[in-house]
Image (cartoon, rainbow, N blue to C red; front, side):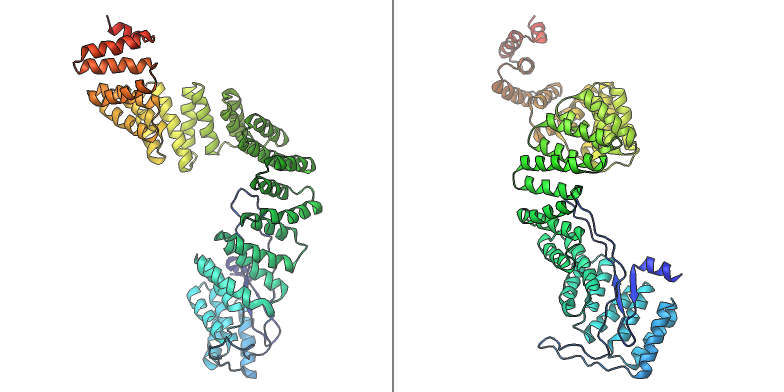
Length: 536
C-alpha cells in the first residue's frame, strides 16, 4: 500500500515539525450540511495542516488545580534520535518498523508523551483504533493541556459513530488550543466541532463556533454564509440579515444567499418582502439553473400564502429557465394538481418522468394523475413501473394505492384487495381502507368489507365512508348497527336520499314495515329511483 493510498484511506495528514517537536495527527472531518429548508453550500475542503508543538519534552503549562502534575521525563539525545528514526519509518509507510521503534522507545521512557503520540498515529494507520485510543489517552494524561490529544480522540470517536463523545472531545480541544494552535490548525479543530454541532442540531453552539471561524478568516464567504444559516436556525434570523446582505453585495449573483434571505423574511412573517427579494435575485442570477432554483422557492412561498395560481406560473417559469430540471416539472405538476388542473398536471409529470425516468416519486405521481383522469390501465402500468424503481415507503404506498384502485375499476377485485392492503399496511389511510372495503364488497366478502369500512370511518368519518359502511353492515345482516349509522347520516343531512333508502331497507329487514315505508317514501321524494321501485 503506497503512502498516497494510505493517506486517502485513513483521511489523515501527518506533518512533522522541526526536530524535537511532537507529531500532530490532523484529520479533515467532513462537515454535515444543514438539513433544513435553508440552502447549504457545505464545507470547503481543508488543506493539510501543520500544528506546531511545544519544543522539547517538558510539561508545557501548569496542570488544572487539584490535579497532580504529570511527571514527564525528557528524552535523551539517543532517544530523540530513535524518535526521529521511528517518525521516518512512519513517513516511509514502514508501519511495522515504526510500531516496533515507538514501542521500544515507550519501554525506555514511558512518561514522555511524544512516543505515545507517534505510536497512536501508526496504530491508526494499521486500523488498530483500540490501540490508538489507548495511546492517545496516555498522551493526554502526560500532556493534559495539549489540544492534540482530545482532538484526535474525537476524530476516532467520530469515525466509530460515537458522536456525543466526539462532540465533547472536540469542544475540549477547541478550548485548549486557544493559546497554542496555528490559525490553520485552529480552523481544522473548529470545523470538526462544527460538524458535530450540526449533526446534533445545536445551532446555538454552531453559531459560536462559526463566529470563531469567521474571526480567523473574516473574508471567507462560505464561513459567512454558514454563520448566517446557523444564526437563522437558532432563531436569530434578524441578526443574520446584515451578514447575508454583505454576502450579496460581494457576490450579487449568489443564489444560496438569496434563498437564505427569503427564508429569513418568511420566518419573520414577511412573505411579500421575501418574494420581492427573490424577484430581485432572479434578475441578478447568472445561469438558468440558478434562476430556476429561485423561481421554485418563489412558487413554494406563493403556495404557502394561498396563491396557487401564481405559484403555478412561477414553477412554469422555472421549467423555461432550466428545461432539463425534472424537479421543476414535478413541482409544476404538484401545484396543478392542487388547482385541479389534471390535464396540465399530466403534461408536467410526463416531462418530469421523461427527464428522470428512474425517479420513483415522479412515476408514482404520474400514475396518480392518470387515475384521476380515468386512465386506469395506464395508471396501473405506471404504478407497476414505480415498484421496480426501489421507492421509499411513502412512494411505495402511493403506487400500491393507485394500483389497487385501478384494479378495482377494472373488475380485478382480488388484485385490488392485495394492493390496497399492502398500501394500508405501509401507510394507514382512510382513503386506502375505504377502497379496500369497496373491493371486498364488490367481491361479496361483506364481513371483510364491513371491517375495512369501519376502520375507514374511525380514521375519517366522512358521509361517503359511513354510507358505504352501512351498506356493508346491511349486507352482513348487522341491521341494528347499520340503522345506527344511517340515522346519524339522515339526522345530519335530511336530504341524503341514499341514506333514507338504506334506512328503509334496514328497518324492513328488522320487520318494521311501516317505518321502512316511511323512510323509503322520503328517499323516493328526494329522487331515489331504487326507493321508488321498492315501494311498488
